[in-house]
Length: 66
Image 1 (cartoon, rainbow, N blue to C red):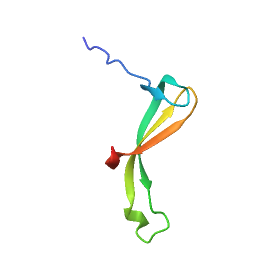
Image 2 (image 1 turned 60 degrees about the horizontal axis):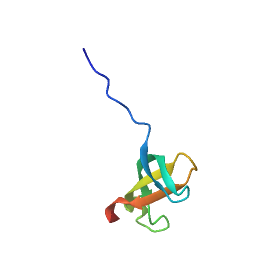
Image 3 (image 1 turned 120 degrees about the horizontal axis):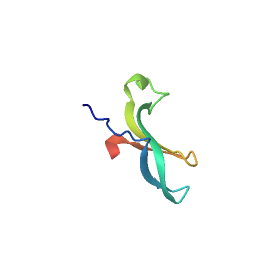
Image 4 (image 1 turned 45 degrees about the horizontal axis):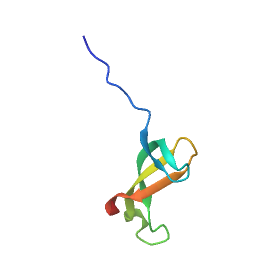
């Protein structure tokens, strides 16, 4: 008999805007850092983006700087 894997609806992190631990939606996005430059197609970097599900506040951190 197969068992079900529990699924989470998000990660719990501290939200500075809410001043408490809240559930966040977390994703990784590729963002262009130098849109106006001639090498814009090659300046994409991965960012960790966390959005608070309580207030909607979004924070991002460049993964190469983590």
